[in-house]
Image 1 (tube, helix red, strand yellow):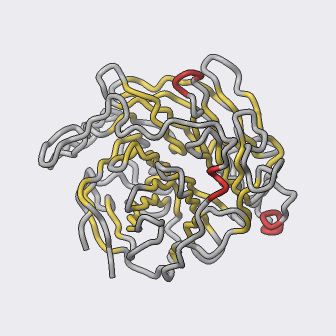
Image 2 (cartoon, helix red, strand yellow):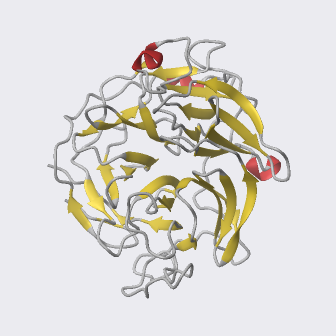
Length: 386
């Protein structure tokens, strides 16, 4: 096994069961329809991002000894924001004044904030939400043209339904997709850019598996919409936002840099799973966790899928080949006491780094500076092959 080294070098093989290796999934040809709005490919690095050369120490690497936090002051140079409340979404928005990464972050209680290192969070929007059960403000994605329009999209639970809102700085959040069923559970939803101008929405089943199977319901689905909330052009069924059905409690949604691989994590009744998103119903899981660590956000790299977990500290590392088939058992990193604890959302910055948000204030072992947004850097390779 070749090691994957992140900010805090701690790796071990994940104990417990895992699924068998599935056949190579069908390509997501539906996402490459010619009528989609072209979008520039991913940049090799985010403006202002630090990318250390091999063997070079820098702010992307954690020193061997970092002083413990003092209140909201965190001495880890990779930490961007501190003293937040249950971070549910992170998204890079550019560079800060010092050349570091600036980002948006969402809190489950309803805040959308702009975060930059050593600066107090700036509230972009405060949204009234119902955070009971697994609801609240649970998803975040940016417009494909964020640099020009500054638009963000959030997934929220209200008193009557689950919905997607469009947020512009200084303006009242506008609902663009409403009527997603609400129930005693299965209210959490997550968002992602499809990297082609559309927005992907993963919805829970509202505690009713029959809704996830109902083609006329928005519950338990992966949807693809445009910036106004309408079904995006090029969807499998014209006029329908539905791409995939059969979800229960989605935790994360992520797209590879080339837009060819889309993944969704989900909590089922008997196991946690990650699925490759293809048109139709959810097929066999690409990987399962019978011990149910609470799979959350994910990041799809060239040869690795990162998966965060809500019930256990650290990060799952699933090695994969170019087609998206997993090539070995997952390894666990950042799971020791010097790590970040429990991680919820992840958003890739490039093929070797990502933004993460922690969720230690709910069921974890928070430090005084939790919950936090931080940059995680990967060097080397990770395989975990049998």
